[in-house]
Length: 466
Image (spheres, rainbow, N blue to C red):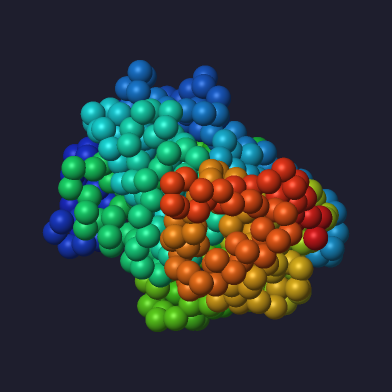
């Protein structure tokens, strides 16, 4: 079977490797195209995501880096459905992946290709989930991993990246800035950024294959959407399932965005892509000023007869609490947006209760400490909230990774507070017996006490039941 990279704008074809996301002629998105009629069986006898290897670009057996990603559960959410007036609601629970997010799929395929290409070091831009995934899979492959992140990435995701050995560089305030920087300094690195590497789509499309194998009569799939990369991945997977005879009932694509960062606008059956200049949302993974895959995401909505829906942060937080209490699934705010969307559509009569809806749950809430203070005050805080509680929580999480000193802690938090304010928080934590100080030469270091560790564990437990 042959496979090529094909420009979705001008139709130009390129060799499948190296994986490049943009056409050098017109700037359009490049996508992998297969001769599906030649595929006798689209699935192998492997488990998880690599079951779909026959519909991936070729990867050498010896270079496959897998940690059991994919094969995640499609959960029947009966109690959640009852709160919305009945019908069938299914949750595609990607929190079950090795680092608790759907991005493990992309990291597995991309790092495997990096090994195939002989790469010794890899670079990516990320809001956190892909950065954590890439760092973990690079650790397994013994590849150096540099991660460019915006300044406001939270402590939990940073902790994952640090613990896996990722080299973290902060740049800009939004993912668009980080992507531009990763592209600028990529010389000598394998480019792994999902928006710059079309293998991300190939890996993430497997979510659709799993959904439609398990349930062939899905009517709509709700996808939290930022850059549009995930949305297009899901639609490509649906179209493949049609081409391969897995289903004859393509679901509608419903893309959900926070109202504080709505780059896709439904107007009279068409979807318009627009640039936004300011953003305000707790769902930081969905923040993008101009979505890289916006045109293809819009096309997915139009082709499927779907719609774009916006939800508020309050609706997201309420959905997050409902999801946890009704189904025992703790998601990050960006993931809960899919449940908030379905709830809103049901209330407004946009979805018939008889229709089968799938909500994509992309990542675990344990990746986002924002939810602790956001849930505690009913979701009233906005993205700019940097309250004392949250700062102390981030300090405790950082010190759990390793002992550190004031300036390094200040850099970790993102320099959004003055260094004097950070030392004030350190002093208050010390007074409460949660951390202690000691000296290495003339430099003062801080470390967690046993009490601090117990308090940190308790805070994480509390986040599960609030």
